[in-house]
Figure 1 (cartoon, rainbow, N blue to C red):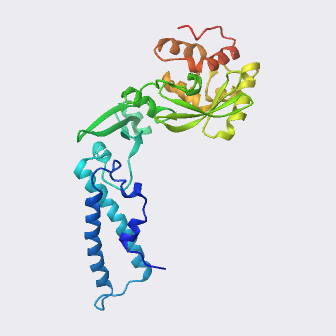
Figure 2 (figure 1 turned 180 degrees about the vertical axis):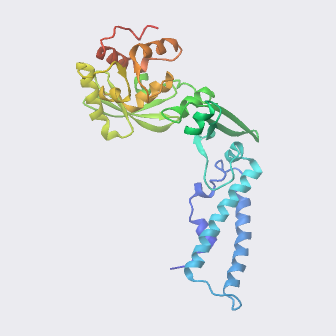
Length: 331
């Protein structure tokens, strides 16, 4: 196997990989080429020392491993140098410089999550805590960060849980996401006005969409000629899920022996997981708990500022199932 120098290995990287520490490609490329040449010279001297008679010989595998480690160290130094010079998302979020990029919301904001577990030994009596331990609660936050005119800018939002559309809801609360001005699909397909949807296929009147956020694909949705919509992360499960939902919407024949609504009942009624979680997030409900339809109606009317249009077909199905006389469209 031909031994490649660190510089040759570096040149095999794509342009985006070479400049990944500076996505704008404005500053840093020339400086890093000079730094690579300087480190290459040091590496060559060290390599000659390993081949001298005064030091033990290294195997070919050890030499190759050392070259790859050296290239990795170059990338690490590039990240650190760029953050120290111009600042970056890691600096804005207080993260240690590393070769791993922070999680991104679009291309302007990065984010990190904070989940603090609090142990309270004084919530109940001493005897209770001695038997059962502390009362455990969680404080959950998402921190959005960016460099703005060379200075870190952050926004911290408290979240109830890291399920469903928690990130999108937090970004909306932080005013980082705005409604799509010219959407390409109805709200029933998009679920939230910050999402858009791209029509990617039409088969026998059934429309298949790619739901997007800031131009990036999120999941799929299918809309029947009757207007019934079903969402799924996998395109191959769209038809089966839609058929079940459409069948229940037409007949409403699902036998239950309870007056409560939970996640399992919603799935039996054909509701998609995406829609259930989105509804619960919008109206501050826990998808793991049970609710009466009257309680859901009360919450929907209390939160009149939240657009319920996308969920009206499912609410009508629930009302039909429980023979509940209500018009959710008027609040």
